[in-house]
Amino acid sequence: MNTNRPLRRPVDRRWFLKSTAGTVGATALSGSALRALADERLDKIDKAPETLVKVLYQSLSDQQRNAMCFDWDHMDKKRGLLRTRVENNWKITDQTINSDFYTPEQRALVRSIFEGIIHPDWHAKFDKQLKDDMGGFGKAQSAAIFGTPGSDKFEFVLTGRHTTLRCDGNTTDHVAFGGPIFYGHAAGRDQELADHPGNVFWEQAVAANSVYKTLDGKQRKLAEIAESPNEDDVAFRGKNSSIPGLPVSELSNDQRQVLAEALAKLIAPFRSTDRDEVKMCIDRQGGLESLRMAFYTDDDTGNDKVWDNWRLEGPSFVWHFRGSPHVHVWVNVADDPSVKLNA
Image 1 (cartoon, rainbow, N blue to C red):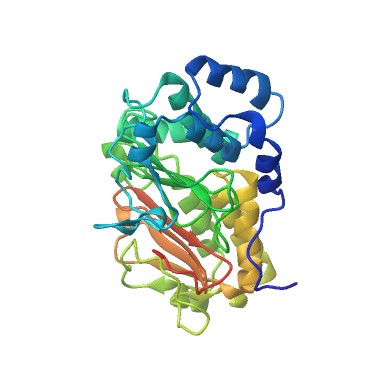
Image 2 (cartoon, helix red, strand yellow; image 1 turned 90 degrees about the horizontal axis):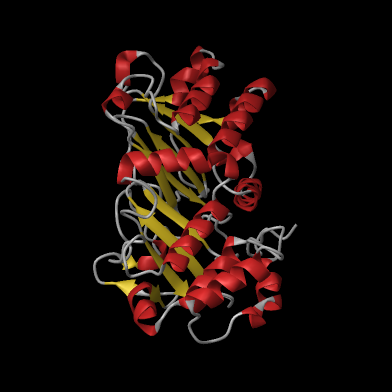
């Protein structure tokens, strides 16, 4: 295998986008035309979120495009390269999804794009997170489109409190998810208890702690780190840097199986093509054996040694879970450590 070639998904969506290029015209579509397109074409052919991003883009008026569409490498004065920015609570543009800025048909398209990048089993869980954190889908979220959908470079980004999600049309080389993402949940006051009741993502921490339970004393000594790093410090360290934590290469086969099950929990919320990208990225940097696992002991909610804060990290892989006081998860995955976090 040529490990230097850009990452590609198993399903070539570029071919699909090109094959449907004549579906919509170059001018903005009316609401009725958009509904007809969705009813007559998308329902019969494909509901790939990349296709819906193109439909959304071509439905936008000039005023809308000026407000939420950007060049691929657009630089923001405060945030730098805007397309690759990741935050735990932000609006990438000023226009809220559920505002009058968007038509009802466009709001429905944004929702469909969101549902397309999230696994169906997790739609209800994300809706609970959105309800708890923002009052529901679209109420405090904003979106942006970079590049021209259907071309060789485009990406849709959806942001809000505890949200940075992407749909990249397989046009961002080397990275999973189209770039770094963020997800999290604050389920109310009770979620600050040790078992974080009502938090839809806490099951991921439970799975990670299942790995910890299999470790012997020597392994735990390597895995336990006294001080948590900054949660948003998820730039790649590369192959020649020292990464704190227990090397997965020192786990037994049975322990690695438990870790593989935990990793499956981490990628479970996302569509199958994004899951496949993560797996390919791990394979290209050396497999699970290239990763290290760290459990941070300085902020243990309930003092129960069920570690709230932990990280799985490799040369070009960071999955940082901060579970205290509520859940923040920062994800940055690529097949090449030379990929920069914000470049």
